[in-house]
Image (cartoon, rainbow, N blue to C red; front, side, top):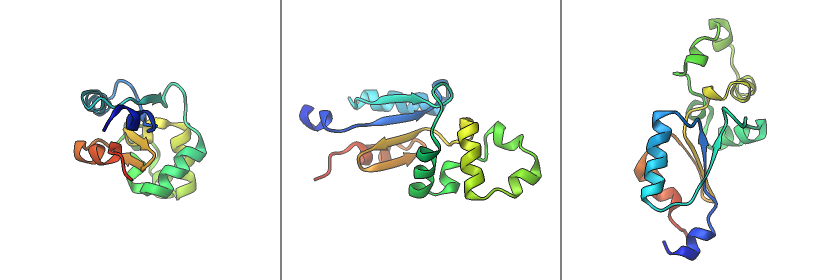
Length: 126
């Protein structure tokens, strides 16, 4: 990828700064020379529209972090009665329930960190 191709690509990494998986993504993107913007949704929040778009593209099971302490702390009745709209509302209110990182490129999103998927996502496509 040459410099002009990089300048045309907007890459945003969403997540929480002190997460170990986030650190791996930061390191990988830096090593590949990928310029990106970081959006810490614990600090800056996240819009319902953005989370809904991620769920529409990747699916609720991929975006909702059921392993998070915040999700596991929910009452069982709340967890069992979650539909997509309620889950999106919860993720907006408590962004730690969003799996991370979320890599957003002009080619779509990737939830989680897999170097081979990141390589595909940041590659220039004709």
